[in-house]
Image (cartoon, rainbow, N blue to C red):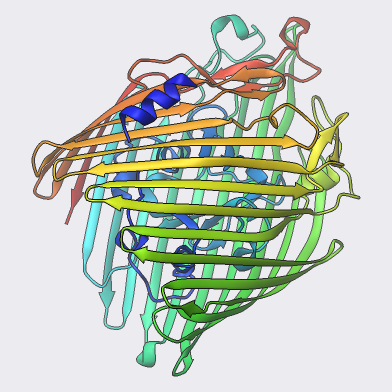
Amino acid sequence: MSSVLLALGAIAIANVNEIDEVITVTNTLEQNLSLDQAKLGQSMVVIEREQITSFGQADINSILAQWVPGLFSSAKGGRYDGGYYSLQGSRKQDILWLLDGNRLNNRLYGGVYLDSLNPNMIERIEVLKGGQGIVYGTSAIAGVVNIVTRDLSKQNSAEFSIGADTLASQSIDGYVSGDIESIDWSLYGSYSTSEGYQLWPDENIHWTASDDVKRGYTVYNIGGKARWLGEQDQQLTMLMQFNHADLERLRPYGTINSNNDRDEKLITLDYQHPIFDEWDLQVKGYYHSWDTYYNRVDQDENGDITVVDDNSYWGFEDYGVKAMAQYRSGEINDWLIGAELQQYRGEDEVMNFVSDTETVQSVFVQFRPQIHLTQFSFGLRYSDISDAGDSLNWSASSQHEFNPNIVLSASVGTGFRLPSAEELFSVAEEGGVTGNSDLNPEQSMSANIGLRLSVDEFTFEPLLFLREVDDLIGIKDAHYVNLSEQVNTKGFELLSQWQSDALSISAALTYADTREKGESEQLSGIPKWLSQVNADYFVSDSIKLGVQGLYTGSLTEHDVEVGGEWVFSLSSSYTLGQHTLSLRLENMFDVDGAVSVFNPGSTAPEEHRQPIPTLGTPRDLQFNYRYQM
């Protein structure tokens, strides 16, 4: 703890600049949603493309962990693996994830898999903190993370990059955009592969495991956007995205070959048109499929080989339509009205359950009055869920600008989360948990209040947050249950930044206490303390040097404590015209710390049945070359 306080006192996180300065306003209603909510008093962070490209071979988890105060993001087993997430002390299930405004949340397991998304295809990442259920719907209990892919441009442009590192990783990506008369278009693609690194020390790996102790991956993404601009501000936009990943899935015992072969497809079509002088209407349809084929070959202590899974399927499809209308009166839209229909189905042959088609119908409204220098919002959302009843939620927020240097923001509201298919229907296998078809949806209330103070080059932002969750879905005696007691979260964020012409220094400290009422222990998998420090020094217009520090406080999983360590990295870049060369030394002190815990099943050798800490990424040197025209 003392190391966190020292860091905060010595250095003062990225993206505490005013939102208007870090995001380009686009024309579609949906693309403006997050910016609108930030102006209405919601806490928001934006990670820009320059910050993303500065991280070399890193995956999305590492980028989020470094640049978003209050967000714990850690891959279970190295880059491009399933992750652990917590936003302001939440669980991963309480965060809604979007790709260009479209839901990514995996209703099979309640969270999200970002292991098939390459950061090189991302334009920016928008993070809204606090309950966002009125505008975004189910699962937005703690906040929303919207991953925005490469933008459209009316100008002809192109970009190409290659990269490598000392973990035998290679990457290549490209982007091109332009216009043909009234149609803007863009195409992008990326490819990354790696041999990976060893997840567990030699003494924790049983002889029945694979001889290849490094976890590797291959990921590629292809996508494109096209937008037709008609008369009277009409727009017709189409997005197509395909992601593929071949991900090794190692175990420290008994498995000699295992991988997930994953395909993800996303198609959207939306139309926007002014229907009256002050009204805009947007109608959008979408289709999202996520398909994984799992293979696993085991070896027992007699040396016998067994094919456990041969292309066993698990996946889902999600499709629907959403309509929104906004009434414009002045700088801020005064009314937002919408309706949404979502249908979902999924199945898992590995865990042996099927989720029949589920339908969610919702209507919502948000009123946005402005009184003098204070902007308000008041919202309601009604949702009807097949086989799960209905839900009515509300929200209120406000932002008051005393002057350009002092801004006060506050938000409060309720939200809900539906049980996942796993929580409802899973059949216990080795080390597994049995589902419960009688689970109730989780209900929550959250509040955030923050202040932004600016004096010359210095900015300071304190933020308080509270959250209460009723009927939280937890685990008791290897069964999913609604906890009888309320789960409460309370905490704070302290953000600061100092910037001159040549030097930028920023830092953040987050504390989150999340406990079931009457309990003294922190909820499993959630760290109490987080801290980030970032410093960039511009030697000249073409040379930049940087240092990044990340502290993840201790957390407990399967009764094993991990975390509690600082990890520092160095970065540098040199730009000559259209060419940029970058070097990054990740984990410069080669901290040998654990980031997650592997829990062996009942078939593990007797001496390997205790939970095993999984190591984080070791020190590695990354190289990247980028060409822009």
